[in-house]
Image (cartoon, rainbow, N blue to C red):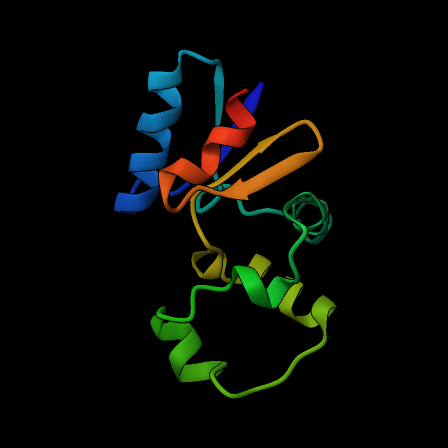
Length: 114
């Protein structure tokens, strides 16, 4: 099963979901803005992405610009910040098995479809 962490308000996230649906594979949609990830879920996702929390931040968000820009935090602090403010998480994130990718551009999803 392919899982997509999706924000329906985001054009790139909608494009990722449509790309997955077009593949014909079964898809589980997680609307993480309605049901935010826990710290542990985000930690597991980061391992699958092979990324640090700082690498999955949306730095163009107002909350980031007004409150976080230029500040340094430890990884566990970034994880807490992202789980408390899920809009800061890059999207869409697509997960299957032991791997995950950020689906922007949508072609990044291809390795998970084979």
